[in-house]
Length: 221
Length: 221
Figure 1 (cartoon, chains in turn blue, brown):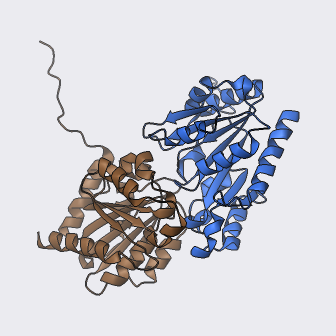
Figure 2 (cartoon, rainbow over the protein chains, first blue to last red):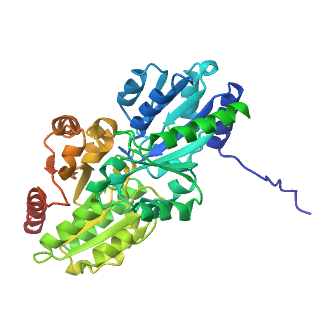
């Protein structure tokens, strides 16, 4: 009889283990965390600024900003008067759980209700790295084109909500919202969908209602 | 005396070795090859279509299309009557030299003058993988914002030309071309720069003149 070979039912990657630890830490402090992902320039920071301005009187918000380089985004967020931590990935194309952990280390979690994580601008790589957050959101934008769900499916599959930003410039672009939406639904049926404009404010209420609803449900759960 | 330790002066990665082999193969067939990189939706395929239409009467053009999934782009290129190969990266966030080699395998290189490679839409990862091409070009676009060189420096550093697409929508966006250009110049002084609109055709001549000049110099060199 050959020596018994151990069978491991479920192996977590190093990143997944760190993500679980992040989640436990967030839950211990009752911090609801959302990860925003998008192509470069789709409007992650703009949506964060809009969200802060709308909700900061009711909820205590903090932000972790991921970028290859520069503190441009964290500076804009900090100017709103909320705690912000900049993670410079040093060339890495995504945030990972260890980077988020280092962000958590530098935030006063016991006085935060909502943590927004802004991932590196990238429509491919962030999909593969769990961070330990409670919700994942993808921000698309009209100028990118309506074919993106068809060409970058992994990112659309794993998210809890899809925001379509920059609808104010719809007349200037050939963008078929129905075609876009069909592509999203094929990958992620029933996913929450919010067409809006961070510039004009149109459609923001739908996004804010959803986010605040998820946050309330978490805090009351 | 300890055994002599061999000192290797210059180690090429596996990808770099394949890139050198691609280059040798292109040069043997006198094919001038250009790699186009950009964020998703910046206009890589649109620029390729414009370039094919302008140059295909004078030069024999072929295209290698890199995408995570779908043949949407290769179909559009093939409709112009030029040989096109679709590389499905299967989730990989960039083309590498091995993928380009498999594209070369399926093209009639002896009857091609100009090979255009469309990389996966990604402003981070493609910068790290040499393909063996003769020129690397980055396509930025107005809706992405004027801060991208500051936030995604590696991609801007290594290219031979920067195209700024979608200048037709400049009035609809807060985009400071001088700020953008200063960021580019700080990373890549003197790099060729072509603001243009694939939609209206404005500025395309500058790009086409540059590309055709590089191609001519290569063929005569």
